[in-house]
Length: 218
Ligand SMILES: [Zn+2]
Ligand SMILES: [Zn+2]
Image 1 (cartoon, rainbow, N blue to C red):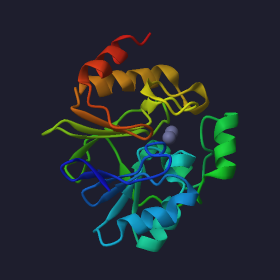
Image 2: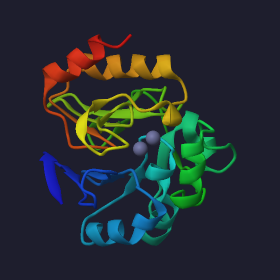
Image 3: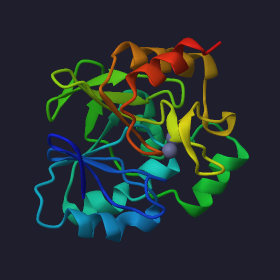
Image 4: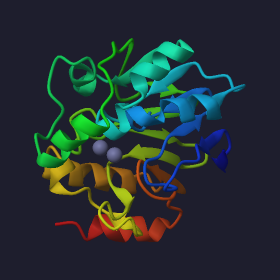
């Protein structure tokens, strides 16, 4: 596992940093695709893990959630506004061709959410901040003392089609509400994080670049 900050690790995957999962103290953040369950379980072997928390509910983040919760006996957490989707009571959004394709190829089974997240909750020393737009229940996990943020798909540090690095808004195919999503990018930048870990791409440590990106949004 690669250490990013005190108590925060990214789990190795291939292609590296294409679809990220993190260990944040004893909380696993996100669960990649349904094909990643064995790899993630193997990588976590011997480490205390007490919760799986999702930054949001999309097939490349909830894929292995059900399998891992069962095999590792973990409770599952996500924001209230993505809970029904995680539990299979509402469809994954947006209903784009890309999400429909990922439902067939990557999505895992629905699974009951036992811990519903909201702004102000604390997980492993990180504050939960609701940051909707990419999905309605997207969240950022933020640790104030050293400015570390785990921000899911609020934006990415990877071009989703070419896999080249760089700050990007998520494409329309994955975005439920564009203006909300831009508001959430501005919210992330306003935290002035020293490190931001996204669902896709390497961690970002260039504070000025993130601010410039947010300021340039329409
Ligand atoms: Zn997503
Ligand atoms: Zn994603």
